[in-house]
Amino acid sequence: MNEKSNKISNDVKKIFIVWGREAELSRYLAQGLGAELRQVYIKRWGRIRLPVLIRYIAQSFETLSILAKKKPKAVIVQNPPVFAVLISYFYCTIAGAKLAIDSHTAAFSDKKWIFFHWLFKFVAKKSVLNTCHNFKNLAILEKWGILPAMVIQFYNPIYKEENLEQKMEDENLFNLLKNSKLPIMMVNRFANDDDWPTVFAAAALLPEATFFITGDAPSSLKKTIKKNLPANVYLTGYLPHKEFMKLMWRCRVILSFTLREDTVLWSIREIMALGKPFITTDSEVLRHYFGEVALFAKSDPKQLREKIIIAMKDENQIKDRIKTFLERDRDRWEREISAANKILNN
Image (cartoon, rainbow, N blue to C red; front, side, top):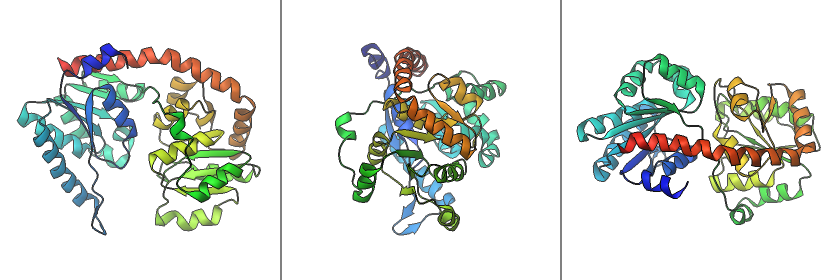
């Protein structure tokens, strides 16, 4: 971000609200918009895991408490869940503050959020700005008659090499990585849109590699996973972001897939920040944004194995393409952030 952009984005006091366990994508956007990120995620009360409804109620009160104390002139809120948007709208209406909504693809396409599109449309029409992450999402906003709306397609974050090279906290994971001839990482959460079964099957076809797959598996999947787990697949469990990036830094090829249509994955930006060859889902949206730098695969183990071999063979050329892409892409990012700040700061 250049000096001029920083000056613009700090003119107005802004808060970025996220109801979620992970907030790296929003953290980066908040930084660009000169907003203070506040992550509100209350999963437990002591040892008791809270039901979703109770969690949302608790997060509503916590969000209102933060906003009442901070008194921001503008609130940017991540959607979903749409209830975080509704609470932010309530504050902005009472306080006379501006509301901006940053909507992820799930807000448009997941069944549980499609049911609340009526509420999404209502608050979106009351906001001064609606941002989304790809042209397919933007087409939906425009069809709904929601203006102003714009795509903000993220730029890569910056990670310090000395931090990435630090020893990992998990000694077993660290030693496995150090001794692996071909470490491959899959960015994964074991969510409904994660294509880990295809990666398991591909791993069985590539025994010389070690596959490191992130994420906490829910209890409902553990028996299936154990039954189908190849010998060369290591499940890391949930990793704090610093450890997650250390893992990515040590792997030669990164896999980043989604079964959700029209989704642009934040992990691709993290992968490119490290200059790593990567394979992602063969979709129209991902080809549109990353066709110059990515390798693409369908949910086919044999095709995925072939693409991994190509990624290793063309590793240096892919790294060069990523570097060229990012040098050009910075100007696009600066334009989009400047346009968003102009609306929020007027």
